[in-house]
Every structure is written in C-alpha cells, then in structure tokens.
Amino acid sequence: MRVEGNMMLVIENDWLKVGIVRNGAEVREVKHKKNGLDYMWTGDNAYWGRVSPVLFPIVGRLKGDRYQLDNQTYKMSQHGFLRDVVFDIEEQTATTASFVFESAGRFNHVYPYEFKALIRYLLKEDSLMVQWEIVNKNKVEMYFSIGAHPAFRIPLVENETLEDYSLNFTPAVNKNVMEYELKESLIHERGIANDISTIQLKYTLFAHDALVYSNIDQITLESNKSGHGIEVLLEKFPFVGIWSKYMDTTGTIAPFVCIEPWYGIADTYKTSGNMKEKMGVNKLEAGETFLAEYKMKFK
Image 1 (tube, rainbow, N blue to C red):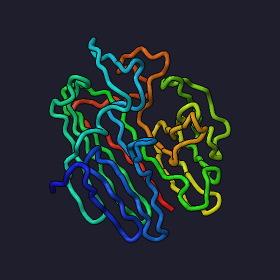
Image 2: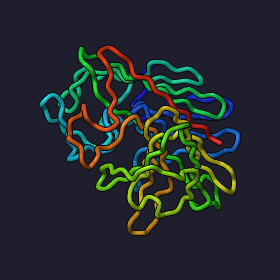
Image 3: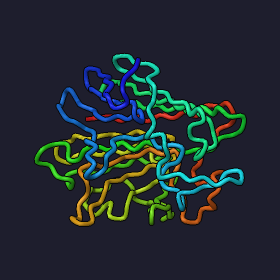
C-alpha cells in the first residue's frame, strides 16, 4: 500500500478512530466515538509542532549534542532521527496498522549501526496498543534508546481548566521510584520519590522542564470534574517523562500534556559521552530483536 507521508491512514473500531501518518509512523488523531472527544494535541507550531513522535536512537539530549563510540565522535540532535523518516506501511487491517523502516546506510554519519524498526498500532475497545520492534542488522552488538512522546489535549472538555486535572501514578511493585530533574536538558538525580501517588496540574509544574521518574507502571491523566482522561500503561519501561511547553512570557503552559514511556534517558550532567556507558542505554546483540509495548486507554 502506498500512502503519501503526510496523508492520514485510519484504523477504527466501535470505540475509537485513530489517524496515523507515515512521517515518523506518528499518531496524529484519536477520536472517541462514544463520548465525542478528541484526545490528541493538534500539533500547532505556535507551541509544539509534533503530536506523538517516536524517539530513536536516543531519548532526550546528549551533552554537547555529541557521543563517542569505538573511538569515533558523532553529532546527534535531541531525540534522534526516527521521528523524521518516512515509514513504509507493512500491513493494515480495519483495527491494526504496521509501519516499517530500514536504515540501509542512510544514517551512518550520525549512527554507525544498521537496523530495522517496526511500529505496530492495535485497537482493542477504548485502548490503543503500541508495539515496537528494533532489529539489530549488524554483526556486532548495537546500542540505542527508544521512547514515546504522545501529547494529550488538555483540557478535554469545554468549561474545564488545567487545574481541574491531575496525574495519578501507579509505581512498580517492590521498586523505588527515583525522581530526576533536567537542568539545561541534562539529567540530575533528585533521589527517591517517597510520595508519588497524585500530582495536581498547575501552570508552574513544568517551569523547569519535564518531570522524570523511574519504575512507574501506570500514569492516569484525568479530569477531577468530568472523569475523562487517558491512562498510559507502561509496565517494564525503566523511565517516564511528563512534559508540557512552559510559556515564560505568560506563566502558563501549552494546552497539552505529554506522558512519555522511555527505554532510555537524556545524558546525565556528568556523562563520559561514551554511548556504551550511557545511563539507560539498551544493548542488543547481533541479529537479535528488541521488543516493547505500551497501552493508551481513552476514557
């Protein structure tokens, strides 16, 4: 099937209608048929021109936008390059869509590995499953990070405000939730987050960039008035970021909140710059396949 990169491919069931484009295999729209709500951010460039990019082969920013690998230095901008490539459609049914991209030597100047990336979307009732496969097509181990960056429209309902919404957390069982902060886009560890059950949204919450945690299994972004919201189930993901664009001039945020499941994280302020030593980096053996999935439930 051939569809232009910015043309919407649609999957739907009795609950949801989801629009996806080949550019970055990015979800651009989620419309709930039963409650009439549009859940995804519009991608307005006045705030942030993306909606749900896939971050690869890094998550966040590298210190100095550089890294070293096997005595070579490479430059790479924040969140990597996969969000900007045009995927091929591997398969589509009424309720599923699969997108594939093979590197084929096109990124060797910034990333010296060959890979295949497969992104699948599957609808089940009021939920959208997202599955990733990364195949190492090299004869050596491959180092990478991968992450999601979906932005949800807030408020969802007329006559509600940002302050009517809260973030509710379900920590992983028998694991300490670690809290991090970003300073000049680099990670600093703040320590164990002892009380991480609920955070009420307010405009100053993102004044110092994203909130970053480890060992979270689920986050619910929910209206305290209408009960509408989004559950993001991210079991096994080591990190999650929560972000909105803070507007210094007005002291407010953009009308969206991102909940970002990550297999990887930005560089720490004290990083060596060696990709093999990078915090949260994934190592994939030659010929092996990395698998991960998360779920978004729209209510």
